Image 1: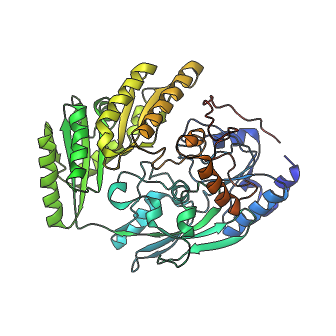
Image 2: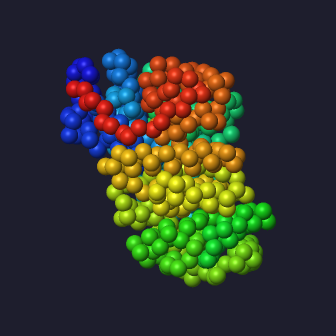
Image 3: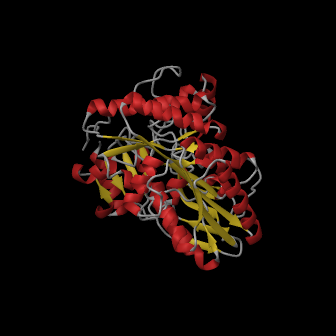
Length: 477
């Protein structure tokens, strides 16, 4: 890489905001996925002007640019697949405005999800999207991947809560799309950019909706001695037009691991549990709680517990949101999948996941957003064992293929990134890719922003390449 770009970046940002030594770059070749990709330079802007200038310098030296939030993503979206400049938004972390009267907030992309909710709480408001990594993931990353979370069932994913964006395009131009109060006329460009995984533009300012705290909240823990009974309960709840704020499922093996670590109150001898949250007006929530309990009992629930108070409710959710960390105690690494199925196919899909685990020699845990069919099977493996890594990837691919076979989708909230780009031809035709490419090229014709993501790298759209164990790209200086 031309040394001139480093000199110009240091003049713009200062020496302490530009990293280029190999030992400094190691941290940034990872995210929460199994992928790797090391940048040549890492920079830390603090203003939109900085971002614009960095992008222009990268264009001048013909170097790709990758945006990064907290690096908690699970699909390799924030990795430098082809090297280049990684633009980390950690220092663009200010909440610029909380407009309580109009239930809006304007934030920089490096604001942590949970911190926005904390800032809104004194006004009786909160930010609804709540990924399991909400105490560390950033709003900018949520926008890039269109993140969801346990409460997606009732409140939707990130795109349902973003009304406007300030963006830096690949040539450095600064533009604004959408409006603070939503429903801007013309094309929904805000919706186009949310979930585009940083391949069209870099978001430098984000306007989001804030939700008012509900009058009443009830959290139920339904305990089952049969995995099928638990899965059938989810199907029946939705069939009866009951929409909880959240409906999470943990299988017995996973909940025992979580309970041993968190001590959340999950029963160690059960086959599965449902964590169901109801929100709204007091009378409506009480009626829903009764209806949900009846459905659970009709499917042979051993017990349906109601959290007695807020501390008990928070402890149950702590168990759910720290589950991946708990599983990390059992193996050197784990691969968290993200597939979507029709809810009616849940029982048979869980059985198929177990069969695939047996076939490839893995105990696969299941903890997921059961209410909207967004599965997160977890494959534990040792990345130092090449053969084991390959088996883990094969098992994972089989699971995702099965999700598609039963009418599901490749991803619900983690994004495509590097992880699923080679699987995209399973659901998109050449004509589909041609249309997506035309949209992509209208904004990013040189693929200078986040190259090597979403679109398959194989020569033909019908050709599926096998996953390879991640290696470290050569570090240029």
